[in-house]
Image (cartoon, rainbow, N blue to C red; front, side, top):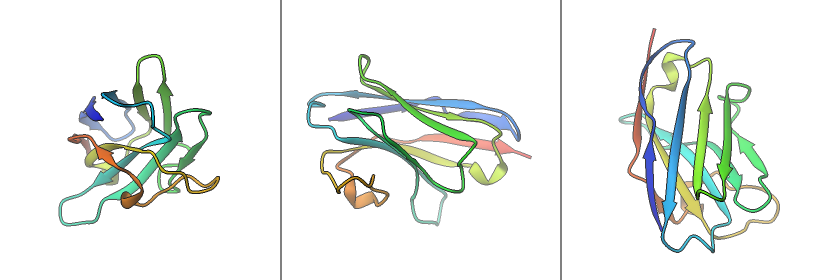
Length: 126
């Protein structure tokens, strides 16, 4: 599976961006897709995830109410709508795909995901 993330950029605090992640290759076994972010010198952290089939979602508390994850199965594309952005949202955002199931709870650990995109930089100025 290959993932291509896009949509990052520079935005002022309070602004919005929408990230996209196009998946190609053997996507038929995809169970869950997600977004993570990483600031230089810090660990990559979970942002949001969505099951590819029934669209169940899980969102980190730090972005709940501001970020929305969605997917378009017909286009094999994952999205992250980010509203009311804050300077602390500045990071490189990565999309990821996982094929394993962990009961009904969507995974938040990096090790639960099998394929990763290259990352797209989001910079929020104050």
